[in-house]
Image 1: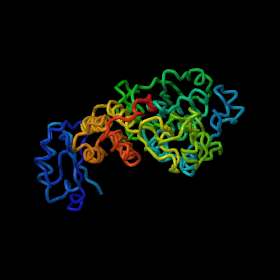
Image 2: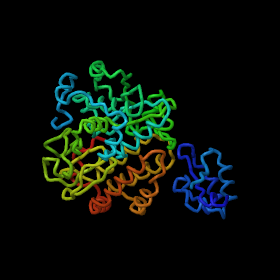
Image 3: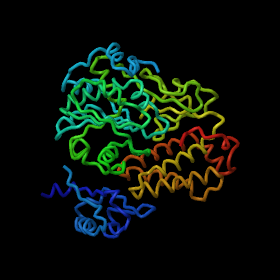
Image 4: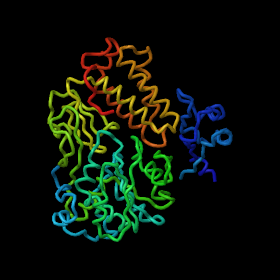
Length: 72
Length: 366
């Protein structure tokens, strides 16, 4: 269902996140790090054009702090 | 204390004489609360009817009366529980019946004695009283639930909301003490959009008062000296100039800052205190609020680094929406208001160091 993929959102659990920063390296199009090394998620993170990078970033998080949410 | 909420006093007999028996609207209560457009009085102003509806749809519902009141400059909830416990318990009982709950948990400070009032109730519901957890963020609803379950009183990520997954996974309706007292007034057809406020600072009338709707915060206080500013809505609220006509908001806290106090020193102290009150769980809150407190301390001392004013803007924006709870957002709101109202004073301190008012005792309790 391509429409569902259009509206994916990346969510970070701020309690779980410990600022490793891997996600920003794997998905620079959608994540930048703040001045203390914690991810700021941009809307572009869910862009289907970067779907592969998005999934790799989620899988690589050592704290399991990233989640993809399908929004309607 | 005066006003409609305090008409009865702490004893049940006097309460019944003043208000009459508890009405039995059942689930129709929720529509009445929706029509009154009652917003939560704990600070977040969330519509009470939405929470009631969500609680009614969940599994084995339970009602939590939130009297945690972690904000040191707020006293309305403890005052209500002490002087008018039955209006609060009436509201809790009405809410419990509306959502189908058989159990009520009251969270309150140790100095509030509720045992006598609870023993006087005849509602055939299970009401227990639990001492609150310490700390500014302990009143956030998921923190209250964590505390009730025997864990540290710290917020968690939402969703799931307490109505879906609350106290021991039950549907949990967490409502502020003040909100529930108003629910009982609404059920009796006696509410007129009044608001409990706590006044402090450079005022001749400190304490809790019941404010009529539409009265600006500046008109609620009787200043004891010419005023520089008001902090409206508590530590998460905003600084406003005394001539701005804003009504009380949030948890109803109004602090008057007199001419003898320094707004820069007060804001720096408050920021440092709020940074320490972070639950310490979320990186942007821990690091961001700590960094902002450092900026404010350097500006107040007249030793800012070259980028500090830029950092103040950048980091205030950067911490918003980045925590599991709204703690960083509240600090950001307060700092944005300080920049707007005290812009010249901040510049003065940055260039010339502490002013004569900096030595005055702090107005804020933090």
